[in-house]
Length: 235
Length: 293
Ligand SMILES: Nc1ncnc2c1ncn2[C@@H]1O[C@H](COP(=O)(O)OP(=O)(O)OP(=O)(O)O)[C@@H](O)[C@H]1O
Ligand SMILES: [Mg+2]
Image (tube, rainbow over all chains, first blue to last red; front, side):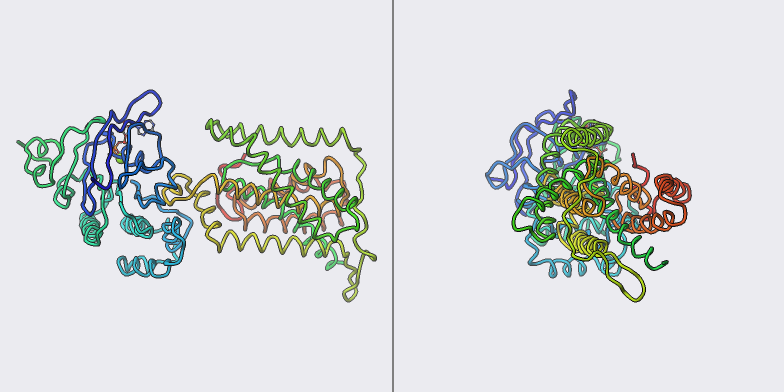
């Protein structure tokens, strides 16, 4: 049994169906990648899991039906790091981190903050700075750290490398590997297919709301069709 | 004379601050100006009045304030349930909030007008003597009581918002409701908290205003305008800005009335608001001003 099992997941925006019934398995302790081009439905999938939008089909977590309201999903330990670096501008870096731990009882908050500051030293230097004034790279680090504050069982990252300089992108992927190293299950949504396939154990390819391909990261990397469509190589 | 006017101005400003914060708190979380607050203040003033008058032995004023605040919470939540919740559910435009909150205030005032006359009902005397002297300035006991109660409430509220987990969650929702959900914040709970706080503020300001001006149907609506203006000057949705602006407004009003007479006071308030919007359209705090109604 996988940690998260998605069966026949459908999502509609108004009358337009964005996901046409997809199946996915997310294995415990692994990095699972979901790749696809713009508008394929990657964010929609993550939002459906998070309980941010209504869906049909079933999502089970450790064998039990996942609750449909977002606060209960978070409480269960499924944490989404949304696309576009959504920090709370106007709140300090530390307040942002504390919000990440909102679903916990607050007993471990000191140690948790300390752990994130060790992982992300730049955040410690800026702990009282307005999060809205951080650089793009720092904001991305902050939202990842904020997600980790919740002790996630599954961490879902939506395009964490988008719009970052190559050196920061490498940093982000290094962090994702260390998150995996710590035993956290990761669902990674990326357009940067090359790097994400390299660090993922298993991957799904989404096109227009359908899963069109799946396989281990390395098998997809060597698949000529994938290479042509997503890796910028010629067949 | 100067010190006395200043003191009265601060005391008046403190009540305006309660009203302004009642607005600002709902505005910052739900992004609409809750004009029903005025009607709520009127009802609360009557509730406090009859509680104080009928309960025997006559309760101390803080018991009345407490009781009225509880009623304020209940009414505020009731209002949210029957009116605003359905607007939220249907994702209707913000204008709906504006229109319905204004309508509610008007309806409440109209109903009160049916049952009560326009002549103010005076709260029973709270103090055996009405003033005391500090040096050579005469200070009204009533104004002192109002100032103390308001400041205590404001301090508690600021503590709640700035230092507690719920307060942090409220600020997060006011900044970005979608991302707040991803933190596991239950937006319904935050909305409940917001309306409860607004209810408490309506309850306390209702009793205090009733003590000061007597109780009449238009009490809340007329005072609400001052609170609204303060929250606009302060930068809608900003608590600190609203409080600062409310004190400023109270003080200016006192001095203006002393110099120019009370007839022109309402004009003064609007002039101050317009001046402020002109000089500093983003409000004292510089946030949220673009979304004002
Ligand atoms: N709130 C919405 N209302 C209507 N349609 C939407 C909404 N959000 C997404 N869609 C549509 O659903 C489809 C999938 O969108 P989604 O955001 O999931 O794509 P994505 O794979 O995350 O793309 P990107 O890589 O650009 O982020 C798109 O056609 C999009 O236009
Ligand atoms: Mg997306």
